[in-house]
Image (cartoon, rainbow, N blue to C red; front, side, top):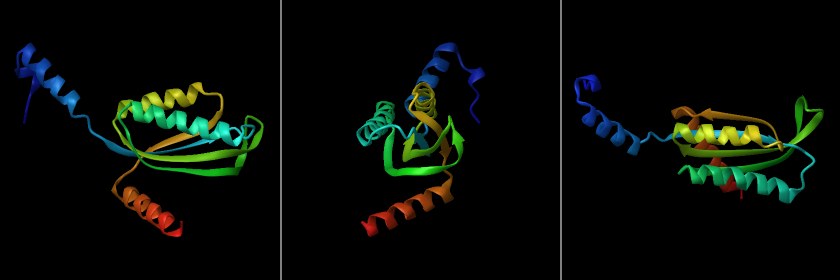
Length: 136
């Protein structure tokens, strides 16, 4: 086992810098709901804005799906429908913070949910993407 407290301060700084270079990339998926008053061009622009945030954070976008307008289970901000979009990506944890901050700041977003995928969810997501590709 490796103990950092047994090292000198220069060695600690070097090791911490090396760990920053090798950030762990986890697999995530996020679903967000856009307000229904937007046009189709505005919804696509909003989706591309959030994908750009991911790309700027060195995330690898695996799949992006626009589900269209759907009825909400309960009203959110007095709206009963919304445009749903799903994005699957691989990223480090600090990218998630930036993405969710952008979601909170954007008034077009009604709700969002980001989930870290385990190995079973990753297998299911890959199977679902293959089935969608076969249908197209």
